[in-house]
Image (cartoon, rainbow, N blue to C red; front, side, top):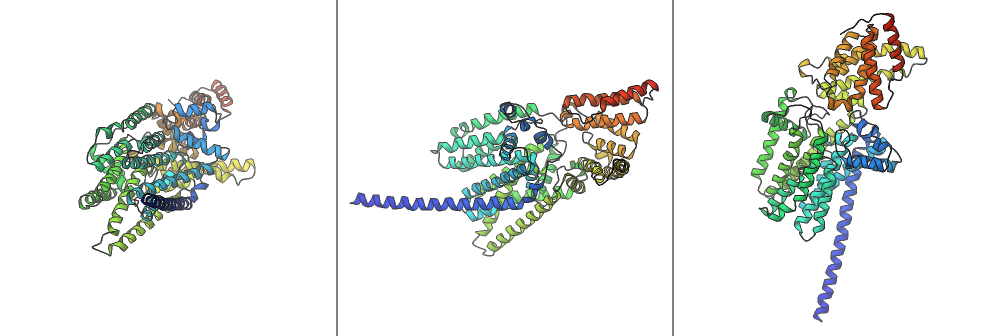
Length: 580
């Protein structure tokens, strides 16, 4: 009798647990769908964007592994580098998009990037909710994460898909690890975490420090590290070292000196200021000596505030420390690399995860502070102000991503950086073709061509003149843009001077992705030498064009062989006026 009663109670408890579990699943699914819908509406404008003129041509437009999807292309993706990088999952994500769309379609690719951005916010919701056990707070935190201004570049720029993938699968690995560490018997969570991490690091090596944070989590939780804690991280460490070694072998040494300790601190403070969501967001930022010291100072104040938060707050101290170390730890690898230009927004994406964790913990602390009831509405007010400010910043930045020319215009206005201004100048030159579309006859178009080119060339030179010679990075496209601008204005000698400077600064590692500009430089030089009756140099330059076209398998300048023949005839008729 007693046994039957116990059995009935157990059945009743199991039934209640099943009902609670089903309700729990429904709530989770509901909040997740809301996050996805919010992200879709917030980033809807990026769907109409096409391809960007940096990286997209190499990862997408001219990538043979995407144009012909077969077994050989799959082998290429898995076992060969792409554009000085090894990120096979990144490239495979494009393959999946193309298969679903029935071909390469920028709309589908952008839609996929928006979806991946949404999924990163969803996994943020899962990770935060696992600690807070409060779906409403976790949902609000995920929405705050969605509108962070540094995410615009990652979602709007197709080539930054790798940041979305690495962050999503990295956070998924962290989530599974949290589940595993709370229930060591559930060994499947360990393998889910490891597999997720492998996918993450094969998307981008920026997630390579995650195993250290898994180790840190175990140490903070148990106040010690056991032999088991070290052993179960070994597969993570081995995989990390293998992938980093592969990536290191295919990436070129840019030859730039590493930052000194003082410069590293200053650059870190500036990145923290940008990470706050209140800085100026741009693809390229000027080098440290040109950065506003006010921004560096403000970033330093925010960093001090983080430290004070850890020292003064007693509750959730471990989570606060974990979040602060995550912000700094994920920021350190890109800061320590010898990039041509300082860290861009996409390199702050992982650090923004820790920032939102930290803000969420602080707001919850205020909300639940019993001694001061007014802190509850104050915490909600702070959240709303921050959400509104970040949303405004993100939407403002998104409005700049309407077309490549508008992007570079705004970049050049925000940061007077040689690369930003050079790209804007080149798009000004390209826009002269748009002015010719309205012209009817071929004669009218030819007449308009010279006027339009001279006008655009003068405007481009006006922009380039804003850059002081001391701040020019010789490895940038500045001299190419200046040479082409002078050519449009008919300044042959100035064109030759600048394009020769540009070609002289080309390094072997960069030829692959600068080959179009190199080819164009030789073509323009040949034209200039021809106008100056220096047929020897003109023939040399156009032969270079012919060789480069053969290497690319493309015929951008189809009449080049005929042009060389004509130059040889003119050289035989008249002695060359060599300019060397």
